[in-house]
Image (cartoon, rainbow, N blue to C red; front, side, top):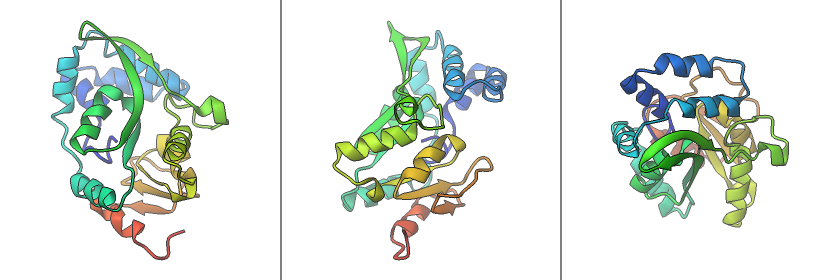
Length: 211
């Protein structure tokens, strides 16, 4: 979602506005297991109201072309959704704005309208032996969603921009790296797109040479 559907990154936008960006960077650059990093970052949100969280998320613009891309895909009967290691408080906002079919993400505990810092993580990697060890194993949840809609995995398309997306991208029928924000080994990924316009992915879905 961050860097693909949104032209920005939620946790860094919140960190910038609330002045804890350096703490985020210390955690993300640490050698901790990925899901443990997610747990620690969530603790930084303790005390933030849902109202303020939502207000900040709504300041992040959609990626150019996101609305048209989702519309065109849905017009072709694609099921379109979000699998993110962000938070459902954010994915439900974006999914609603784009009229998407599903969204999966970490769940922040909220009490009396205030985020407690406790994180419920969907994980999934431990069930399929995935190497990612992310708070949300995107490979696992892609498989789950494909089963929900009675789709063969070869008929799925995944778009991402970071190493956290890799297990999903190499498992999907078509994996598209969109403006990768880090050096990623692209073996097993079909296409890499450069340019901040999500509509660019459509030409690859219409490519008769595609796998």
